[in-house]
Image (cartoon, rainbow, N blue to C red; front, top):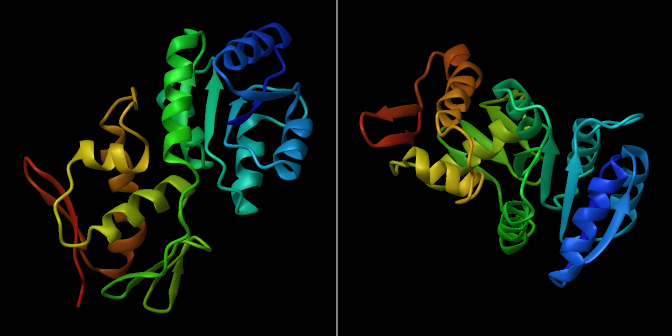
Length: 224
């Protein structure tokens, strides 16, 4: 398995590299976001460990650029910034998981292995629930003929609900399906994304298609 580590802290990056090599990974290291983006474009990696705070091009920008280019390599984002807003921003740019520094290597290894097991997401066919249409390949969303702009993570949550349309999905289901089973953040982050989605796909159109089932979770239903 080939992993790219992008971090401007040379000693920290070298420690990760040595640890991963000892676990059987093939590891490349980039010391800044510009070099990291170039390597990620040129080489097919199984996963990327990406620091946020870097000179020149930060981790958010690198992640966003890769996702905009439809590069779906799993990304584990590393940062010393641990606020909820920073976590949401990292996930919204398209990262698959988010770890706060300092982090013990066994924890990082477990999270990285979980991402590698999941692999690159498949490119499924268009999903339709009533007048709501999602194209996972282009990440485009429309309600009728009206385009709707969503962040990467908002789209992922909506796509999960659309694939399970009419079924009730709990917070744990959504965390497992959109993040992964080892996610250690606040599970209430699901409520944040549901609120964002309702404000974008339901309220402007006078419909209620994301339904809360008290004590159970959420369900996406058709509006027609």
